[in-house]
Image 1: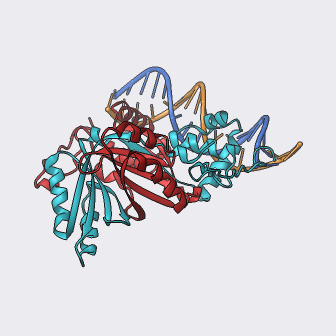
Image 2: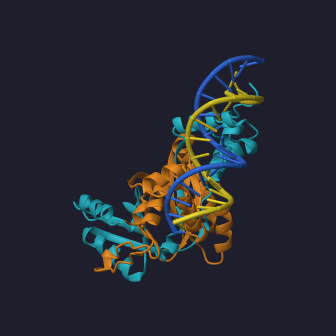
Image 3: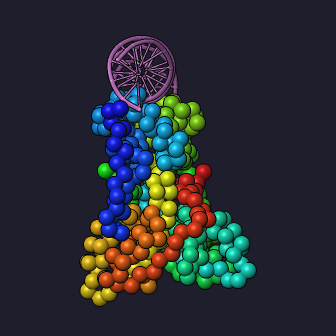
Length: 170
Length: 170
DNA sequence: AGTGAAAGATTTCAGGC
DNA sequence: GCCTGAAATCTTTCACT
């Protein structure tokens, strides 16, 4: 036991200090996760160098992270702007009584909506749509309007641009 | 010119039918994008088989998609639940007059917030936070409260679970 | 631009600690 | 659970179409 001995489960001190402790993961696993979140296509050999293990050891750990469901997959990140989608919109939606199903169907049938969460609170859904222009935005919204109230916010910039790795901790 | 000849730029017919045409991208590029969005770690050789090109041709196309800024990177997808973050929360926030900077600082300093967009409309920010429990959620919200109004929605499920590939079209 | 083949890396599989 | 070393596979480069 060389690296895995100290399954560091730190105790939180203040409510906010819940230390982003990743139960069951040792420092090597966390390092691997951080590297793979930042660059999924890194070579195993290079990854091994960075976390100071051998290539087979890293491969085995990655496999276990996948098996345990911690890593769910690997994806290319694309820039919707470069594909001609110059506007990104967050749409909050609350279906009218009895029209929930229809609104869900409309959301699913609208390809510009690339993600939609069901949420608690005053809204029911929060959807993310990428559209080519204001006209297309209007068209997307008009698809939902028959089934309830909507509230749209155009995304102006990313104040915090994706930093999932912070969840992993050191 | 064998595959790249017909840069299919289809004309949209109805506002919603903006056919998700990916200007300048031919069918092979789009197929490559879809495959890489779905699985970034696919071997070039396998990718080549699927889009029916040779490995060097695919490698060259991928390189150009990266250079053109269409592919911005590759990342491992992780499941926050499996890391102990059992609650995901969308927090809308509107800073009080003059406290915008402070609120941004608070957002940036809160690692549970893994993403935050500046938006138009009645809110200013929409942040995504992963927290371990209700107590930690409260702690995160309490960090923002001094600087303005907030409105939290717990994510219950994913009505549409990430389908960026739909932007790419066929 | 794409193909096919060769050289260089990488990943995987043994066996041992 | 990890390491070293060898075999299989993949990636990259280069000459040619």
